View 1: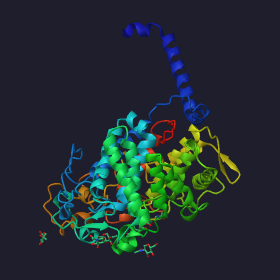
View 2 (view 1 turned 180 degrees about the horizontal axis):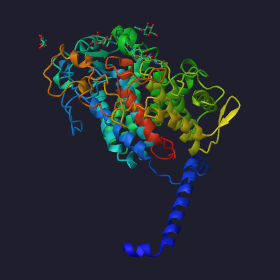
View 3 (view 1 turned 180 degrees about the vertical axis):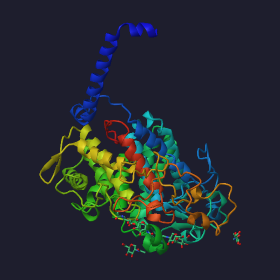
View 4 (view 1 turned 45 degrees about the vertical axis):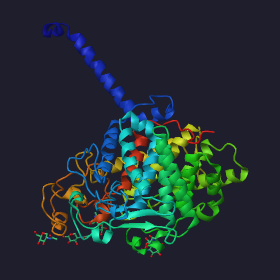
Length: 525
Ligand SMILES: *[C@@H]1O[C@H](CO)[C@@H](O)[C@H](O)[C@H]1NC(C)=O
Ligand SMILES: *[C@@H]1O[C@H](CO)[C@@H](O)[C@H](O)[C@H]1NC(C)=O
Ligand SMILES: *[C@@H]1O[C@H](CO)[C@@H](O)[C@H](O)[C@H]1NC(C)=O
Ligand SMILES: *[C@@H]1O[C@H](CO)[C@@H](O)[C@H](O)[C@H]1NC(C)=O
Ligand SMILES: *[C@@H]1O[C@H](CO)[C@@H](O)[C@H](O)[C@H]1NC(C)=O
Ligand SMILES: *[C@@H]1O[C@H](CO)[C@@H](O)[C@H](O)[C@H]1NC(C)=O
């Protein structure tokens, strides 16, 4: 064989030249790939998976497993086990499921419900993408872990358990969830001590999840929808902030208003039920709650930007048989959504200045990455609505932008988060070769075989050693405004992950893991 190859050196030469030409061509095409994509983005290779995002998605999805409370099923995290099995028993309820909020072990209903709403939304928009990379079943399973909890937490129409564990008590301990022995009191809202935002967020979560499970388990989906309708009525009938009814919550997940959650819940109920009365609620209460023209950051405490994009969906795809007055209101939602999105585009005349020198959207030092991932998720979703409806441009103060530019913004944020930053640090734990080693997370920071107790466990918080267990998939708070990150386990604003960060980043990565989906109406006319 070897001899024969040597026999004709000219062919070897020609082969070499051809290879070089091919390489040069490939390099040229690679550097222009953006333009190739742009010119035929809808027809070309609709199902090409971006491998690094597929990898990131499978990692991000695992943080839900890290956070699960109760009796674990098919546990995939070697250092996790059953915990909090008695939660709810003092009121004869099984509140053992659900997820720990962050690095501690309180189950806070308000952000947990938001996690479920966002995860549902991600599945509804991008379930096909998740399925292509074998993550859809994991997403369903994690969502159900929360909705099972929410169903049990809502034992009668006007009672909802909104918290398990006392944060003050919980924070006097540093221990593994499996080792908890302290009391875990439950907190409820009811007709005398209502909590509109938490009831409405739980309604939104259950309505959105009912849509997710509709074709998988129609009985379960129906149960969720019934709870969602009751909770919305409870929220709307007894309008008072849970921060007023139960002032202790102000120190953790304080609410700054409930109008956004009412609109958000009604919008999800419309999508889930097709019942026009919910759409009417959204349009008639817009003037009161929607703050037209003034965009705000999408987060666990403010859902307005999310509502605006979600209601734009109706404007884009499902506005048959609705009155002119309603159409006008829906148009106002869409306009405010667009004002928000224009602010994200770095070149736009109305670009927000709330970003770091290296381009990361950065609003404040408390869990900064939540704003970047939440905005980017909305940008991808909206860009796909534009593509599907053949809306070619977004108008930003006289300048025109194409859907790809919203998508490029989202890509820039995700790539920064995955390591394209001056620290060369991935803020998604477990992804890449360099990621935070001192994540503020009790379970991850304590060796499985440690026999420390509630109080002397704090030595694991204060050690400068890397965590013995990887909190795989955790999206930590993130860098400071100057794009730097300091390893410090007790700096909660930088090194603590949250479950809602995970829902948001899972949504974002799912949107980007392959080219755009064709969007259809959730409501079948
Ligand atoms: C209603 O909720 C408040 C606040 O959590 C609680 O103090 C009160 O006991 C509850 N009412 C009943 C009847 O359980
Ligand atoms: C909670 O939010 C309310 C409304 O914005 C505010 O008045 C209150 O001071 C906040 N509480 C804390 C502890 O920050
Ligand atoms: C925890 O362990 C420390 C050190 O071993 C011990 O001094 C302390 O009494 C223990 N605390 C409890 C509540 O058992
Ligand atoms: C945590 O880190 C941020 C950013 O580096 C810094 O601004 C803040 O002061 C730190 N907080 C504490 C309590 O050390
Ligand atoms: C960036 O911010 C951190 C925390 O606020 C600070 O410790 C560090 O010195 C700053 N670095 C630069 C280059 O300004
Ligand atoms: C973190 O711990 C170090 C040393 O234990 C301490 O100096 C620092 O003040 C702590 N920071 C916070 C935010 O607790």
